[in-house]
Image (cartoon, rainbow, N blue to C red; front, side, top):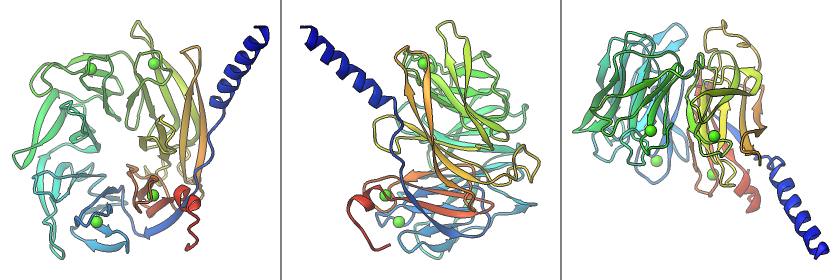
Length: 385
Ligand SMILES: [Ca+2]
Ligand SMILES: [Ca+2]
Ligand SMILES: [Ca+2]
Ligand SMILES: [Ca+2]
C-alpha cells in the first residue's frame, strides 16, 4: 500500500511538473506584404473564394498571391492615417465583408462598403462624427456569442460610451454612458451574470438585462492607466473573472486579480518592452488555454513614448494557474525581434493557408507582414519553402 501511495504521489508530482513548464516554441515565417504605411490590418474572405484575405489601410491583399487591390483613399495626418482601426464586418448583410473604420484625426466612425465586384471603389458611409476615436474593436455585446458589435473608445471624456450593432443595413448606436473613461476599453462578463459588461480604465459598466436600452451601472473599482484592449478572463481559475491588458504607450503588460470583495490586485507580467497597443487573446498552440499575442507598435507617438525607439518585437505569452488558486505563472515566447514588423493596432489571427494551424498578420507604419505558422508545415514535411 505504501508503495502504491508513493507511486501515486510520484504520478501527481510528475503531472504538476509537466504543467509547470513552458510549452514548446512555435516557429513562424515572416513575409512582407507591403512596405508602405498603415496602422492596422484585418483578416476576412473579401472576394468570397473561400480563402481568408488581408485588409490594411486603403487596400486588400488577395490570398494566395497577395495581390494588392486598392479600394479606398485614406487621408494622411502627419505620420498617421485617417483610420486607426479596420474591423471586418458584413454591415449590410449582403454576404460581402465590409470594413468598419475609425480614426483619431478624422474624428469619425464609418464603414467602407465592399461591393463584391473587382475594380470598384468601396464607398464610405459615415456612422458617427465629431469625436476622436483612439481605437475600436469587435466584441459581443448583444450576448449572442458572436463578436459582431463595434465598441469604439472615444478620446474625449465629453464623448459618450457607445456600441454599434449591424441592423437594417447600417450600424445602430446604443448609448451606455454620457461620458468616456480614458484610453483603453474592453468587453466581457466581469460579474458572471452571463451578460458582457464594458470595461474602461477607470472602472466597469455593468450590462443591464437589455443591453440596448437599460441603465449600465458604473463601478469605479480600479484605475488602470492608458491601456490597450482590456480582456476579461479568469486567469487564476478561482471562479472570479480577472482583467488582462497592457499600457499601450508605455512599458507594462499586466493582469488585475479580482478578489471576492471587488477589490483588484495588479500583477505585472512583463515590463521589458513598451507600447503593447495591439493585443489578441487566442489559443495559439492548441493546448486548450488562451494565449496573449501582442507586439510593439512602431512609432505610436512619433518618438515621444517611453522606449519608443527600442527594437520592435512580436511575442506570445502563456499562463499557468497555480494550485493555490491565487498566483499565475507566465512565460514569454518571442516570435520576432528587431525586424520591421511591429504589432500595429490589432493582430488578427486565422488559418491563412488552410493547413490547420493559426497564422496572423500585423500592419503598422513600418509595413504589413504575414506570419505563417510552420507547425503543420514542419509536421507534414513540406519542403517547398
Ligand atoms: Ca479570398
Ligand atoms: Ca455581466
Ligand atoms: Ca480569478
Ligand atoms: Ca496555417
